[in-house]
Length: 192
Image (spheres, rainbow, N blue to C red):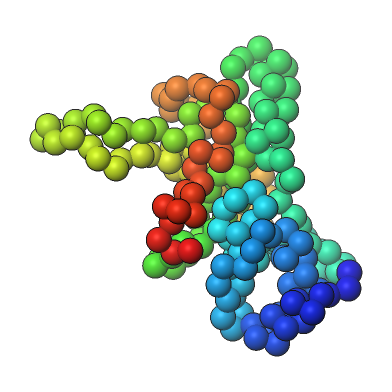
């Protein structure tokens, strides 16, 4: 892959390989922020992510390869869900996860990049809290909370646990809702 002028220019500003930066740019809609060692972009899927979600961990570093996110993770989740549901004759929901850093917080957490047959965002606005106050902004990222819990169990290093089975969580199955419902629009995002 031949790096573009933009990739070469960014490589001198953030001290990363221009070929790696080009791979990031190829997976991104736009660069949001950068500083030495860090490149934050808006991924083609719509979420804000370091390095465009491209990973070089948990693969052989002797080969000059990188791991990309799925092109259509909601469709992938649907295919997996339908296949497993048919095999086990049960109604199975699927969440595909990755990890990300968060503004103002150290550490990475799991988040949803694709889903099927699960309500991803539970809108509690208009409901009452325990003091009978009306909830004005409360929306619960159900799929992201489950993704974070599963990521903790999967591990981030040599654990070799690519799948976590969650049982007993009571949720509303919904094959209409998908992971895009979790992405805040740029107009509502205070950081872009």
